[in-house]
Every structure is written in structure tokens, then in C-alpha cells.
Length: 67
Image: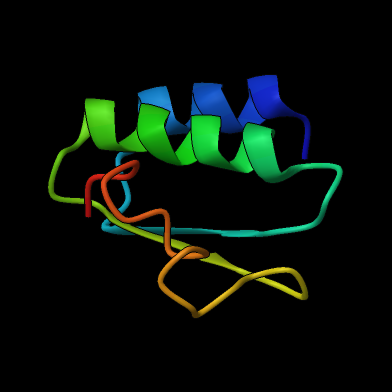
């Protein structure tokens, strides 16, 4: 799905959960989309997973992302 289509979908419908896969080539885009979703609906649960997702304290982006 193209980013514009996802943004339009988020503008039209506000889901309770949104998840993106994390790859080296789309990490920034994924974070931007998750932040946009949080701006539209602060209570939305945002999930980033995938082969490059990290579970150590540095990888969790503590202080950089609002949960």
C-alpha cells in the first residue's frame, strides 16, 4: 500500500490498532505513519514488528516514541 493511501484510510477511518513491518528501507516511513496515526487518534495502539524489530532498550526507542 502506498503511504498516501494509508494516510487517506487513517483520515477516513480511525482503527484501534495499526501495525507496520520494520525493514531497513522503510523504518522512517513506518515511524512517520505510526506518529501520524497517534496524532489522529491518541488512543490507537501502534505496533512495529518485522525482521529488523529490536527488543533491547536501544531498539525500543524509549523517549522517542509515545506509547
